[in-house]
Length: 375
Picture (cartoon, rainbow, N blue to C red):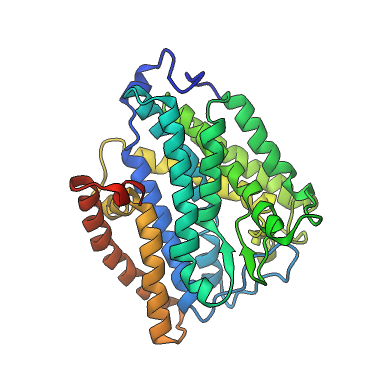
């Protein structure tokens, strides 16, 4: 991808890059849509009686009681990959903005490393507190993104072509990796999800960090492109082509057996670790979603999308707080519900989070401190 960066400071930046800041409207709205859908999946996890099993490579296929249960889960396929993608995307935009303000490259590196460490610490101490009470530690989303940010802090000045080649190689070849000779904890951190024992993992670094690097490269390009959807839409189409080639073939890269195109099984992908159909479909949705949101917000944020912009301004805060709200509610209620009832719970959660996130963003903007800087 063409861009104007050779190091931390942009060289001969285009007029488009001069208009870009780290606080793009489409970025906030898109991240807000992601966290809102994530909240639906987590509400389903805690309250939905008909929720199917997790999509684990090589395991028994998830069984859905009806098409609505399937769609509730399937529609969220791009969410987790898009989170990792947008983490890298934002590193590109914020690094450019700070370089334009004269922030030294070493300071940008330090901030990224600190942010990565904060994510890992919050995952272990705040999100991990309930897990510790149950006797295990789990390396999940925040920890994996934290490691990815630390890696990006040190490799972000590499050429985009090199970064993209490395990331795509990791995504395409990670099914070949055999880490069985490593200690279980390292297996869990690097590549193999581990769901039992004292050290568990769902988001190993190798495939998920690669998505973050792809997001970083795309973010670099977006910072210098007047109409990035002209690239994002073709990329979405390319990802769809890759998806159908890999899934129809049904061999290498598939976490589940081949299935006819007109069967539900064809549309089941492994997420833990992510197989190639899952990654291709998720990236297609990410590029298409970014393009759509960019177009909808090109002249301002429509009123209908305003709540998602509020969520997207503080996605880290949303993530932590919504989990505790759902967790406490589930512990108190101690029962499961139908999918429509679960959707109602989700809508009530979003209404509450709209108020909470608006309050926190105002505090973060008007009375910033060390906590709000990283949280």
